[in-house]
Image (cartoon, rainbow, N blue to C red; front, top):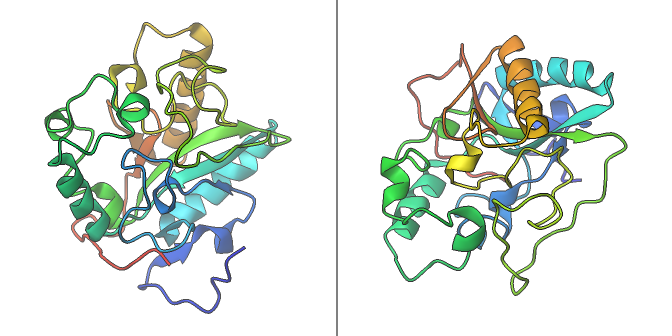
Length: 234
């Protein structure tokens, strides 16, 4: 565990592990298992940072889901503007598509912005947007994808796409595809029920979702609605 007690953050921001260390963290942008296939600029450590308001809400939500044999797992929260800018540069390079099959198999990179999957100004940079899922307890093993391993289509069923210890949400995290749209009606009843469970819980604790990503939620009463931060994740 990284010692966060010696690190300072802007007022109003916290490390999630300092508020609730029982919530799992799978910080994809600090490693290689993301749509760029490499650590993202601005992510210098595998830690989750967010506004205190979000962390407090998630702590309360975690207390509820644990009683039902589940736990939250967070993939991303605060995202520096430097990271968002790096996405823009990456999207403009048609030769850099090593992770296409898993993360955007049916979308051309230049269309990621038009389709709403990538933004030049991200709510994540305001600190109150979170990407997350639900994981059963006890926590199943979670492998780590390493460069050189096969890139598997993120739309494939559980057991065929790269393993995630999440309950089945129908696609992998950050699979930028219509199958990841929360209300996609072509998915199995189990997957749709799992997505509804997550969305209902997030709504109960003050979050709103988006139409394109089952994992993405923003606190309705976010404390910095007009401020985009750019301090590193460290």
